[in-house]
Image (cartoon, rainbow, N blue to C red; front, side, top):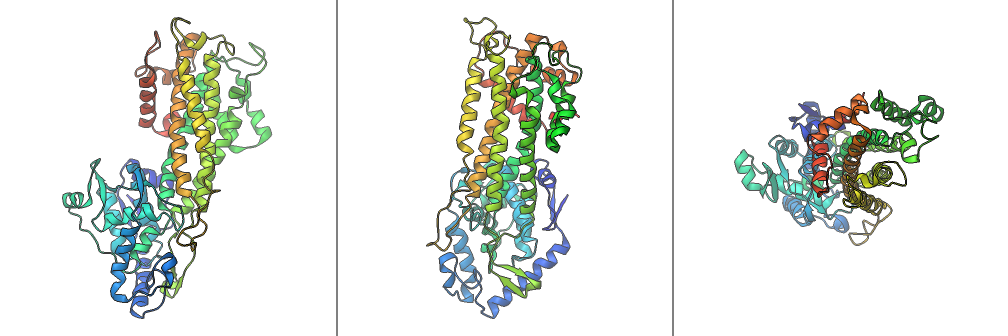
Length: 500
């Protein structure tokens, strides 16, 4: 059971909810604060105070007064008109994360919603009814308006959902699970859609995959090093203590663990004095990526527990302030940084692939072909990896440096954080494929060297992968091999790729 308080949700807890379907509930103490802020909203409506989004229109319409008898209609119109996303649906895990993050943010007690709204979000989570949310259409300020509007529609029984992995009308899934739609009251539509939960949810799912791929990149590198008879001196602890980066030291330690007992590695001077950078600098490069991942993790967990709508209610309802916490710039920067850190896992991997297939760079058979000339071997696997890393270079262009004015120039600077998060997710999917290719190539290189010489830890991985990816004895279509390896990666936990 994950208990939401609005203050301390972690990535570990989010992972439990996303992938192990842990049940979710709201803490009773947090709901007290929610009810206090709700009373403030009701008083504003009763006393006919002028407060943005409660008794006024939105954006450029903030100077338009709305009579109290229209406040419910105002909220419905807001959600319906803003649900104009386009493109394919976000993955169900992202939709699920959005429900969790929105419920947690509302539990901070700064948004003025009724407990029923939060309970509806949690009900959808616990019944695994996931809103269908188009992936395109958000500027990342005033938050993720279009994506969150599609989520809000589901709470009132409209829109579409994924239920039992089938796409259907919301009312059909509600009927099957006995869920009743709610009606949005003053400020509740605005509180639901004015936030950063789409970019943060995409970012969280991307981060969890990137974290796993960081470990996978080290494991794949360990296999490649043995296929290339790499020099282990480069992982000596003294080198990395001399520089002092914690993450670099940790990567070097894990590399030593993966390679312990290998008879396929060498020492400096045995075959060559030093290796190429793609082998020798693994701790420095992958360690830098881990620095990025740690930065991103910190920003995501801060945003998980942030009040990101507008206006916000403080002092048990005595103070209502309009501000800009919906602006996604912190997450936009983090996602652009994640793109770069993740892309480098594939960049250095592709260079190791090239070293294993290029006869000018190693003594392995050309392209690891069983019959060079007659059979091409893994020649085009390297082409595929090169294509993916080049695509990543385009996707890694920062989205956060862009902005475009909206709402008649009232909202004149936006973050593009959701675009940054989507591109980070795309890059990570490409990285996974490149690392799968490295594994396929490294398995074959290890066979040429003699798999009995592999370290115990990598030999276990070799045996497991060979049950699903056959040895290359003649040319075949390798698309199946790549897809099979990617599916294997998806089925494994991050701990699978940790040697210690």
